[in-house]
Length: 258
Image 1 (cartoon, rainbow, N blue to C red):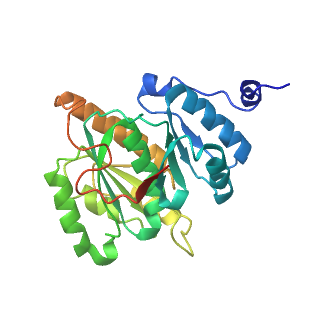
Image 2 (cartoon, rainbow, N blue to C red):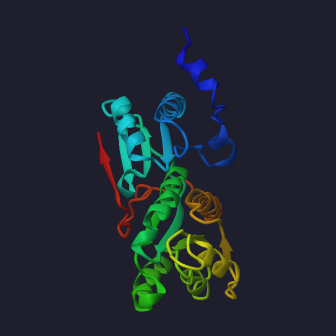
Image 3 (tube, rainbow, N blue to C red):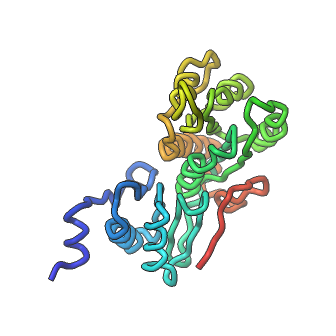
């Protein structure tokens, strides 16, 4: 009879020491995995670390995860279930004092931005965020940006599709690193995120780095590392205060359920 461990090792070789080695936990990309494969990986990571972040979760896989774990773990749900954190009761992310600002140009950019938010939270950062502040109504940007600068965020992630202009605008206004996150929101020539990516790469505003289209996890990993280094330099490591991801200003679309 094949054991669960043997079955898992037939298709996955988990890097269970990644968080300790690099500060970035391994993330389960559910896309292109069967529900059964995802469940096996999640079960192993819960047994080892007590927490697991899952991205690109299909409705079918989410239903399967609920059937396997609904009564035994705590859930944090982002973007209607596309991104999930599952954790054993009593386990919490580390508190490392990093401060990350997250802006989205439009509501359609939220699912990708939430991947970045979820990873930064799991890395131990606090989040300040604002949505739907794109260049079509640039006046909407000023108050959220002022709030983030008053909070002395260490880095900003700016997600945008269409023309991808918002990250360049933000990079020209602030003195912290800005990570441009192009999303596949758009249509026609340059649609699928191509226009946003090329616009960000061609920016004339210094201080903007760019990840690939829809790469929320990549943006979150870079932002988290920057923020954690900055927190350690100012002595905020494990500082008391807001729970990661739950600053008074945060308005992330997440909820806990048992």
